[in-house]
Length: 289
Length: 331
Image (tube, rainbow over all chains, first blue to last red; front, side, top):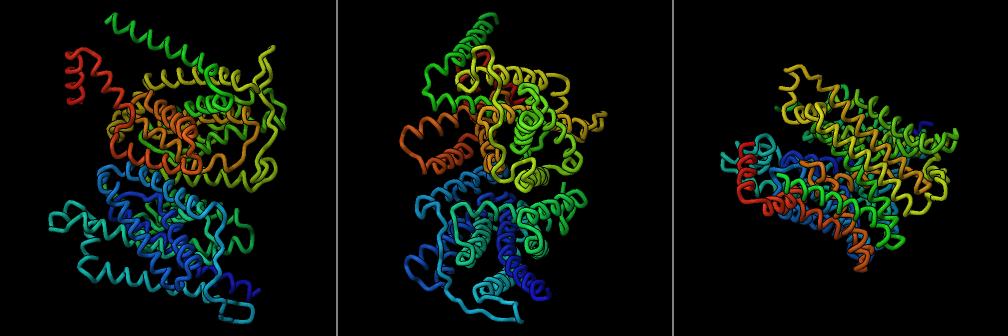
């Protein structure tokens, strides 16, 4: 029983790390641009398919493929920013609808390029660490955990310590005031899109060997990410990380001891309860009028 | 103004004649699409009633599913005659919406959007989880069809099309009258100035709930029409992707006028099902759909209805156009 419990904890930590990568990217985009990116799950999918194309079809080393995934999906983010988020800056609902359109385009591209069926990727390493008897952590999962911690710490330092980070947070607080201080909104939104999309891409790339990508994998991911950002409070980066950990633990434990569908229901009910009790999320500030 | 009125009546007559004659010019599969299109018109117009109060829901398709499941179960397990079960299903959809109002209308704007999505998803997962009575992931099959009326068999798409046309026509008339009644005007007031409306004694919660319940009733009716035509319902049919389509129809058509969403669903369905299919795109259809969507948001931000308004302005006398222009500017 202890082994099962500990193994579930390990699984939950793994789930929490890739979920927080995705959720933080979504929150960053919302914070800076004020628009919900519905295509975020498909950016995750694009990251996974970069690994399919480079690593399993062209035999590029795995880590290089992951890096390529980050850059490629980040570039997709910049493309989205140029194509519709920038012209629709004053129309958040329009931005949301346009991102649904982009979601359909990405999904269809994946179907046309790789087919509807699951792409199986041979894992780059089969090694695993035995933490205790019966408690196993594969290297592949360890990669994801380490990468999540490293990338999120780097993002934290970037936002708190660098001039760009300060400017980005200023934009998230008040666009006009930031622009009056000589901050280029276009530049900041471009960087925010690159980072936000890139984080989703890297999450997809790292987990690709573990989840067998399909073109429709983004759907469940975006649902999870929505729950996390609501529970954490929209626009709160720290909240997103805490909520991701909370959600991952609840979901993994309920899945292990009951059933996957029950876990989904519990997650959604959790979110509804948070919304009813504290409609701005656990870490959300009072909504500005 | 008499002249104007005659044109209006002629237009309405032509539209009616076109709708009645439509099945005779379509192929069999296109007739099936026409049936679904008429059902979707009711769905999207009821959705617009909901948006009048300013709240955008992501659970509308699930509410439609509540109507579909309820009507199917009433008819199949309890043996309720089909036309009655449809009304019961629609009523149940309204009831579910009434219960959901209590948690959901504590939220506003984006939070409401996500909250309604979560509530819908919970309902959908309940269908998926309980094999009895909802049939689990496979859903309900062999739903009893609408009984024949004399020699008219409703499994024929052509006849079902006329049935839907009548039901949807009556529903649209009711929805139109609601919007132009005092209640509808209050909905508009809540949308634009909810604090002001409250300060003159409007219970905004009650009116939001009323809009939600009414919209859900008609969405449920659309669901019931769907269930007894197709004969099977399952949880995947009512997922968020379908909701995305409803949202897209409403936005591309525009929601400022009553006919905007109808225009959206008709034009996009015709493009999607008939033009793109006949051009031979099959797997690439969603991509083109997506591109059309982005283009319409970028270049036609007020929806297709703004084009109609422009055409109208061009055809009416210049003096009228000018006064309309002034009215719009002062509004």
